[in-house]
Image (tube, rainbow, N blue to C red; front, side, top):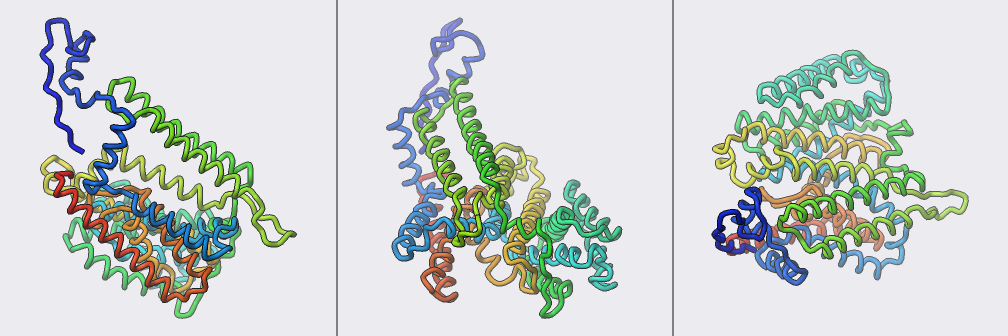
Length: 487
């Protein structure tokens, strides 16, 4: 809601117009709107005014998630069991992570249709490297191996040409790992996957940002091309098993109960410390803030919910009395880590402000001195790199990599996760957390319908309708915002 600033008060000599002295507060007096303190009633009124103005954020997705949980809990007695809730966390983690990377691309009003199959390429490379114990020349064959090396070198060169120097390092690392033939190691395989993902992002981003081909065309072409590359690496009808305990446990293992509580203290305590320190810091400087009681209530609710979830997941959820399954799944700290890092980059760095600026108005950003080409390329690099993490989780979940890796509904569900969560398809609006909320909605739909015995056709239809509804809400909210004069 836009307020009309109060008229600046004329200050007498030695006075600031606010009852304090000193030149430092004179500027504060001239911008009284920035230091106005709001009560609880006014803050709630402002929130509802923003909603009526079309600024819905993730509220529709959160409301839908509550409805879905309620419906499936009533219809299926197995839905709200500890085992199924833990399965929900791991089931939707891979898609959610890929969706988190796609948020960056969507913020610019672009699209990456190849994110799913690109993740399949990264999975195929590290799984093959694991199988042949580092001898990718023997595993791929001569011409495929050397073409892959050339692709790594070209990707690094494209990053240098766009002055995105940091992105040139991972493709060079991948090239060295392949040339040296380092023996298989689970941590090396994950590093290789990330490097391959970055290389793919450099190629995609260069074609879109530097060459100027529309992202829809580029990524549609690469969507098809990467499927062929996966077939070259794995072979028709082939399957690469994940025969490593560390890699298998990425999506199937759990923290110990002690480790789960340590994670709770770090995550919940860190969240509370950041939010409260920021709040009281602004309050001390006399800046506008939400009422302290509302901020404290928000922090308290999140900390209590996290504590309840940690306690519940530390209970034994194994249906077999001879086996104990307890603790927070490993995918939870992975997703939380990406959430914290992604949110920090977008909300607290100059680069994040540049992303929103380019997504809001590329021409205005260019005139303001922002390197639009570099920003556009960088979001594709981030998207493909994060997609590689999603590929590790998805491959770990099923315990293998096959020629269909990253295909099927992987991309559609990942885009759906970001859009359903509240990220706009038109650019300029969205948060990394949107993909987590949207991913939870998609995972809940699939899990709940499966428990009810519904076929895959029904799952696809319902998920598609939910995505259509989310896109409609996005379009209507933007129209409402434009009518209300809100950018």
